[in-house]
Length: 429
Ligand code: KE4
Image 1 (tube, rainbow, N blue to C red):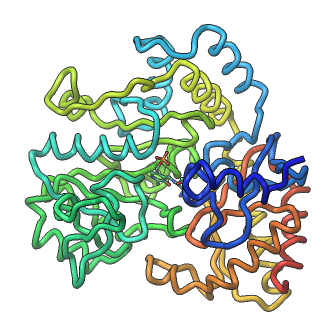
Image 2 (cartoon, rainbow, N blue to C red):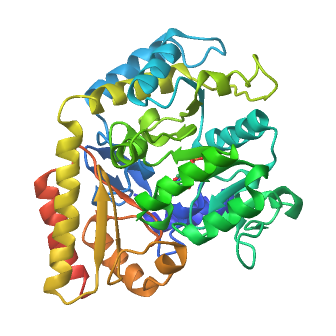
């Protein structure tokens, strides 16, 4: 039988870092990544036969748990009819209709194959629709690896960014402004200086790429006002939060707090593919008519709207739209976070957690951080020890302190209790 270590050694010979996405390599937490052989419900098994309670869920898509019968049946049926046609199908219409029915701000969607592709296309659409080049994002938010978005804050207030990755020419990110998340001061300054030049402002409404940081309601309200006032489009990156924190995504939560709130463009991924390569971006019909073949903004994809992926996504959306689904998921996720906080109190560990729907995060900090600098002040070594102590106890958390966690409908209260018990031990490991 292959071990995780032997597989990792072999993988590194033929795949950079042994992985097809960097975070999987465990470099942030150290140790050997687990090579997963199969998953079912709330569990995954690695190459050595060890079972884990899975709080990654493929980084969000597996909201139903692994191997949901209705999803597997839909995929089997679709696969038998054909894997890919490169021609339109009725199922793409059905998935578009399902997304639009759940998200009032969206009148039309374009299906693509990854969150990166959706975010990149949303930026291009915003630039094409406004005729403006400059964009703004927030430090700590990740919107996929399109060049224009691999950027870190410039020095000083509201200055244009510098590349965070080699291979991204500085001129590609010179139009990208990077602001501090939840900073009204920087928001006001940015719009004072550049408001008329901004095509869009892109934000993770709940930043799962900073573990779990909420944009405050006053901040979001002001962002919406300034975008409207200056003609910049507000792009909600709901790749992680969409159909995960609520059936209508994070925007439905802000619409409850801010009357009439809606973003201009929404980006989706993860859950809408149910574990298969599928993402989407959408907005009003008026803006979407800028897209080829109707308008001048080009965007395309060989496997966009793939018939098997759309079957998987549709079956997933049908299940999460069932009455009570999010009530149950939210309650179970809340029980997990409260249980972890209780175990931390019992063991005298500084800990704070938060959750929304089936998404959660926690920090070894006295209070919830509001921005990237505060998140990165979290005790990294302590997190890494905790991560491995939990992994050794059969609980698979996100292998990085800046990543969120995910609960599925397949997680039971027994799983939550087992996780809390493991944490009680792991906090003092
Ligand atoms: P993908 O291209 O990985 O499908 O989506 C990019 C993306 C866009 N927007 C948000 C808010 C995202 O969280 C992501 C991807 N999330 C990461 C986890 N933080 C995926 C895991 C990985 O990179 O392997």
